Image (cartoon, rainbow, N blue to C red; front, side):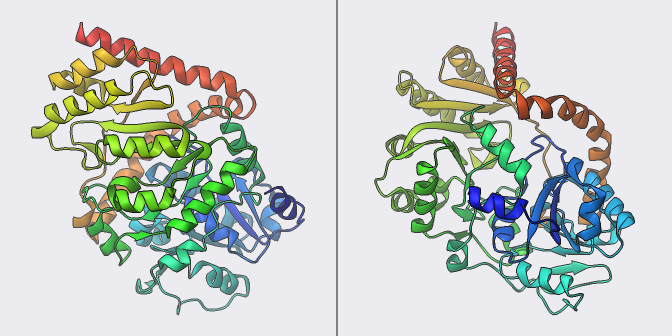
Length: 446
């Protein structure tokens, strides 16, 4: 990793820049697929956060990759694109990812973004960048939206291509590399790096999720595609032997979406010197928890508790019985310090279902339980949206993001230097926030 870092950083005039806007609830997270795309790019490249961009960078660059990740990033990304164009009108700006795919036509018509790659970009990105650098026509390539036109969504990634994807090297983005390595010492729930790529898409039909099968077929022209188990396992062995990496994060609940047999094939009886964060799309089973405990030094299990049964947990009619079964499972691991339960809850929702309130009051004092607040506002059903519906949703989310962005940026202005230089203090702030929520829940149940 260090050799990759030195090679990219020492290049004096990279012609391809990846510029990340710092916004949203997790400001340093960008689409994990972008790591693989840029690692496959043969041209010298450099990753920067928006605050690091200098006039010299833009003078020499010819292509800027501008990720639009979650709707909070839309306003700052559009404003950044306009500023880039004002600094150098010869630069071509490329975007992609889930959010960019959903709002591709709006993005290219609404600002200075030249091309949006819709859906999978793995077999397109390298050739597109080469065409842009040589100022050649690219309208024969599939999956593209650009001002005044679009090409059909014909390319989808194959398991063989997915296996060759490189998610390991981040040396081309020096600041992200530094922050990601520091995040390893902040918390065992590291959202930055490394993410373990297991699958794209999902088997559960959550109406407001871009990974739902019907949404994937509509916008990506494919169903779930799984990475071969040996490729996932190789990444885990690599990170397990990397002295700077202690924690990893899976990009999907592969136990529930792919099945126990596939999960066992991925982990293959190995024990990795890592802790892992694993987010369940359905409530966990003892068999699944035990598999993770056998495979990792420590496991952090994320579970959503909200009115809609986030990620297809259960419908409201089954909520009480489901929570009781989950309660029994948590109780059985009470003394096991190798497992930590992380609950994502709406505090006021706990008042509406006695089972949830009873559960939270009984377990809020346990050392192996953490409670986080979540935002209940979600996207409407995506499988029914197209044309005017997408345009209307884009405008609505854009307005909301513009309204909320100043507050977010003020908070990030405080957190960013702390996160970079005093990770221990930030970890303390996270713990204080969790304890405050636990006290609120106990007061509500009194």
